[in-house]
Image (cartoon, rainbow, N blue to C red; front, side, top):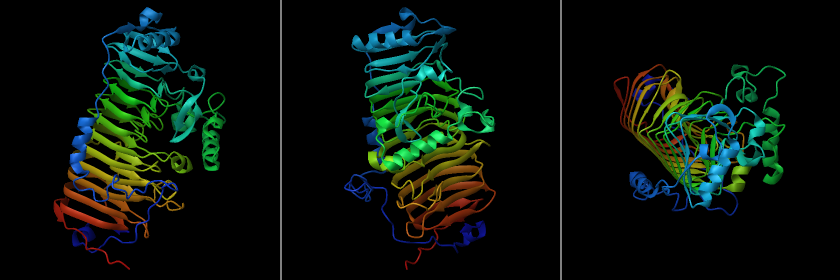
Length: 488
């Protein structure tokens, strides 16, 4: 249903209602309607929970010991392979009980860097860690995720598995050397340097999805050498107390910062400037307790994308992403400023966004919740406030259950309790797209004190149960709440 501005103002269109269907929960798993997921959110979550997240999530602290990579054989000339020097420095720091591995001014070429507990990799002023363009530099394959499905693949450039108290800090640069000559062509798109007949990832991606659907054990989902699934830049897998602070990240093969199944994660004062394919800025996935602060995202895909596993593999792992606080960030390009999904299978809840700026002619959406009945899961308790948006190419708010495969699966997602308040958007294609299913509507969507100044077209609203507008205006005209839909 298309909602014209005249219809919008006349409130002649009502959201369609229907019975909500819980989906995406593995047999025997806790239902998303349990008290912890808080249907009766009220005092349990709300912004008081955001304050609890802010108090609870604390970055790791490190002993004053310092280990310069140059003392372990690293040379900052941009051509000497420093992989072994990084490995030796990290091992020495870990063995001593923790501290800082210092990267001084210079350009240090390396392959994969694997962090260990107690280690802060500190990239100093004027320092660049330049990651090799040779895929063999990221072997042997490690336990990882590619697009939210577990497998063994090329190591992420900076990687940790099962570690505690780890960090990447400093004012220096992490350069992945991705571009039309390296890594990006694997996506199979001529825009990113691929030419017909060149190798690309589609066959491997199809094989991985098929393995997940058939329940092939992860240890048999082995890619890496001879395959073309791009590695992430930074990935922290099953880690606790993680900090990424201050660094600039450029030219990534794929996702930039990807904590998975990790707890107590802080990402702050980071600048992501990488405009390649699937170059999401920060993707916390199936994590608990994440704070993202004062970051700038010039990303080739979603600035921040919150995820929880995908499809059959997400139902197997079945771990939600919860308690995420995003504040004082600047999202500039490309798809969603703050995205939730489309990998929602394990469920996503308790997401708080405040005091953020968004917008440019190259940013599509402000809030972008995307899922479908193939992915399933739930998205609930999402709160935004004090959001300032300049220009968007598409809708300010998009909450759409018809993303990707649409309504073609057996796991209708539950999306409920979304509140946006004190938001202003200067220019967008339309204020919003809100689309549930007839038998699985979106539930309890509230806009409070929101201003949409210049809109080019109409909003689309269908199958929403519990839509509230409180002091909302479009083009200077107030918008009342639509009538409550009649249930069949």
